[in-house]
Image (cartoon, rainbow, N blue to C red):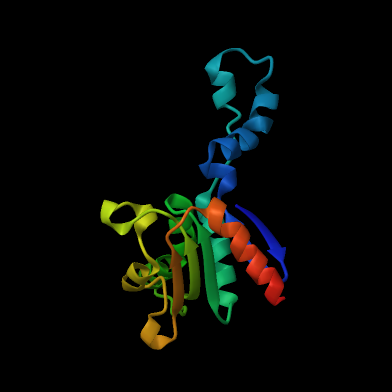
Length: 167
């Protein structure tokens, strides 16, 4: 997981592991170690260790320490779903380990994605649907969400300009 902080806002991405660019970047040390090695066995012996639960538990620890959570996503699919899994992860952990941690839920959300819901894909899943999974605070309890059904390349610059004008 790559994370960065800008003005006390944390941004998480699984770029290192879920994209072809990320996989290529992550595999560079493996390739360097395997140079000169013979056969696929040498390459497979140098596969980097990866434990997705370390990322998830680190992210959960961050979410559990927050007073309120907000999420901003561009696009959808697996990276967006991963970011939203913290609530169900804590629920399952509480149940299986007998813990009593409060379940973190996102109170605020903005999503830019052109994918409609009628295709049934993960990218089209709305934040309001995430309420039923325990990922988001319902609007009746103060949850606030905005879904922008547009291509991010046209909307993102306008959104950034408006935010910068408000700062």
